[in-house]
Every structure is written in C-alpha cells, then in structure tokens.
Amino acid sequence: MNIPITATSTVLFLLLLGLLFIGFIGCKAPDANLIDSPIVDELEQGMENGNASFDHGEYNDLLTRHVDAQEGVVDYAALQSEEAQLDEYLASIAGVDLKNLDRGEQLALLINAYNAYTLKLIVEHYPGIESIRDISDPWTTERYDVGGYTLSLDQIEHEIIRPLYRDPRIHFAVNCAARSCPYLPDVAFQGERVEQQLEARTTALLSDERFVRVDGDTLRFTRVMDWYEDDFINSDFIGHAPNLAQYIARYTTDEIRAFIDEHDGDPSTSALDYDWALNDAP
Image (cartoon, rainbow, N blue to C red; front, side, top):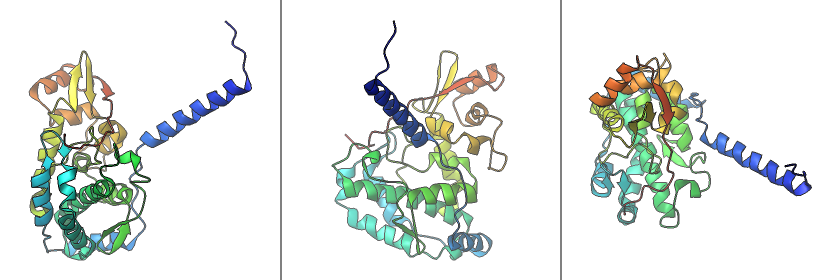
C-alpha cells in the first residue's frame, strides 16, 4: 500500500527521530575524563602523604535508620524529617581538607558524597517526583560542595572517581535513586575498609537475580554494566576482565559461573531493562 507523504507525516517522522536521538544520547555513559581543577592536585597530594581519617558517623546513622539494603529502597519521608542531620554531614564534606586523606579515605568520602548529595536532592523535591529524572539537570548542575570545591554529581563520578581511582566496582557503590540502580547500602563507606566494602557490594549485586541472571541461553545483567562496559574491560582499570561475562564470573553464583564456563567464558549477553522509578520505600 502506498502511503502519501504529507507535511504532517514528515513533521511527525522528524519528531520521532528527534525523540529517539535524545533517548540514545540520554543513555550514553559519559567518558571518564579527569576534571581540570586544583582539586586533583589536592587529592594526589593526599594519596602520597595523607594520614587523617574522616568521620562518617552521622551519615551512617541515617542510612541505618532509613535504608532497606535488601529491597534497595529509601524511606524518603522519614529521612526528610531528619534533613538537618544530613545537612550537618554534608557541611563536614564541604569543609574537609582533601590533602590530609589517603586514597582509601578519599574514595570512601567521594562515594558517600555522591550518595548523600543524591539523597539531599531527592529530599528537597519529595514527595512531588516519581523519578530523579523529573528534576531539572540532576547530574550536571554544579551545586555540591566537596573540600571547598563546588561540583556536579557527574563531575564527582565521571571526572574524579572513575578516572582517578579507576575501579569499576564503584558502579555498584554509587546510587542514582532509581529502582534499577545498584542498591544503596545501609552503612557508610569507610576509608579503612573501603576495599572490603567494594568487594562485598560487587558480590552482593552480581549474585542477585535482579541484576544478573540466565534467561534461556543468554546471560542478562544490569544495564549499568552495559553503559560502562569499558571500565570493566579496560586494562587501565583495576581488576579488568576480557569481557563482562568473565568479570561477572568472579563475583556471581556458582550456577551462573558454571553457565559462563560452559560457554567458554563468552556466552550470548544482553542488558536488563532499566526502571528509573524513584527507589522510595512503600
């Protein structure tokens, strides 16, 4: 059947292309490029000479009371009633001297900063949103103070944490307040045991069928790993693997590991759907 091309159909077609293009761009992971800022110099000085510790006690208490780590949800209504304590913790992050912190302390602080500022962002707009994407420019607005520098969430994650520490496990530690995001833990990351905590978070997520499972003859995994695939296979990153399946095999269940081995470490793979709905407690 011949369908005549009219002005209206042409406009609709172009609009559809535009929406598809926007959707593609919105799902493309930012590159890991180090920020051009003196904050990098301070962090590098701390890696060499830092010996101080940072107290995450206030934040840890809030997480313990308001986060269900098993279900991956946050009681934002209850957290909102304790926003003043969250603000106190964020003020301490804003005033920290980064030169005094070693690598572990820095990494724990930056992960906690990302997660705590995300909680603050949600609380500020709660209950009037159904997704973090209902908020204007949640990741690119420079409004979060860390060690005397005002940063965006994207800068914290993609321009500091990823390129400076080069550890793909951070993708299972930072939380974007979405249902399909790797779950927010109910404890704060701590400098002296951040390595063990990152290992535990990675094992917990990659052993959970909500994030990794076998469907028929296909290994399916969290879309986060699809978005940031290069971090998991790049030889410049800690613990990289030849492919995503072999990275997963290190941390997943015996059954899924056996499936990967049966396919010589390279099974058919696909990413799971991603639910951007707010990770709000029922």
